[in-house]
Length: 170
Image 1: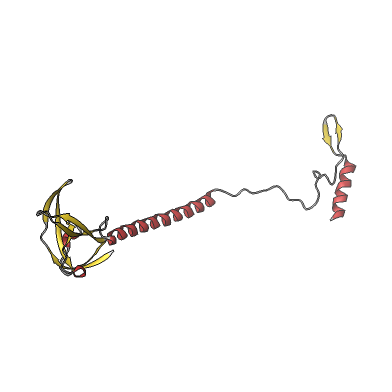
Image 2 (image 1 turned 120 degrees about the vertical axis):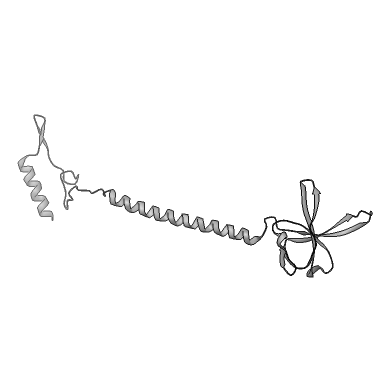
């Protein structure tokens, strides 16, 4: 980007182009002395005044054939494609702020939903009694089972022996 200090501004001239009518103008800048700098008139350049410091992308030199047939040089101001960079930066900043707000809102919603879920869903409680010693289901202490008419039961003597053995191991 190049900064130009405008010292003179011409009168816009309407010309015919492939795309229809357009306005073209010229100016002089302190950085280029007496050279005329041509530019297209648009919303940004229409407001230029003498003494303004403007930012342009480049000043390109080109040759053209004048009406009298001689080869002459012209200096054309090349403007940024997307207008004033500050406008673009403001728009990007607004998008970032909106995105940040939405992200913050989503985080708050997620936290709120988690809290609601914890309040509604009761934790699974393992209410199976815990045993400090061996049980009849442990392989370490086998229990003798006697079948009687397809009923399974433990003999009284074996049950008493098992209880005594468990009590004495503690």
